[in-house]
Length: 312
Image 1 (tube, rainbow, N blue to C red):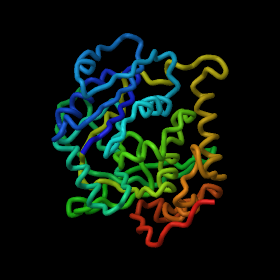
Image 2: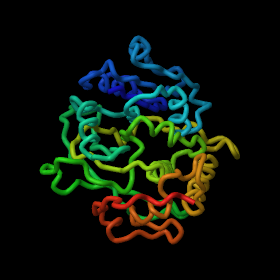
Image 3: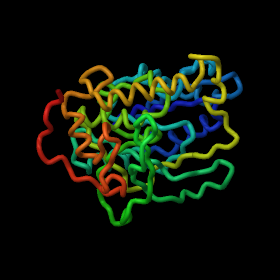
Image 4: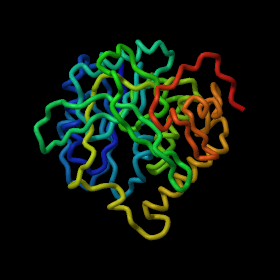
């Protein structure tokens, strides 16, 4: 049950507590390989991670960082074939037995290549951790000016009675658990800065034959607000093409183009299902920038009942 764990961290004091909690809460911690992309200015101590043979720290000068997708792509360069792949941010807390529980949940989906993903409930390191929260699903809330979908999330109705994960239309990049083959099939596109990351993942994974689900248990918590933390864009406001906004604008255009005019191969669509099949499944239309009432209301989509057509 080997699990490759990807943790991207930008000048984040929560990095060490996150990785230590990941290892401490796992039922089988010796079967984890944690790879961290540590972008820093020499202002953090990660010696507890360096001392652990299960953890690999990739060290980068924060001034040379190009954003979260670049960071995750660098981590995937260190990927060693594993049964499972977990991707989290560096400000995460974990439930006891998260590893065996995620594997069991993925197996209960019955899918050959499942993905479990969600926006976890919140925690605050400045407050006592009580482990509260409920599992959530992701729904469509609208569109950006350049045609990328916006997402929200709310509590899964009836989650306490649920015994298997529910089907998902979309994924969250900050908590994503998948069959390990995902890293080979759907490698991260380092040319995306931030916006568009999640819809790029969802469409490419789906067209590669992966099935999307939301977990019906709370297995992690995320530190969302972080009012006193340095963000990437705060450090990268240089002139012209060295400004974070220039990178983000280029990434958004790249994602929007791949959604509206899909190509198969490379960082485009996969060969198993078509982009049209994803849009029908998710209830959205990238060209008209619309969504069905079911997608907007967060209703659970139905399964793909027939063999998916090949992408063209």
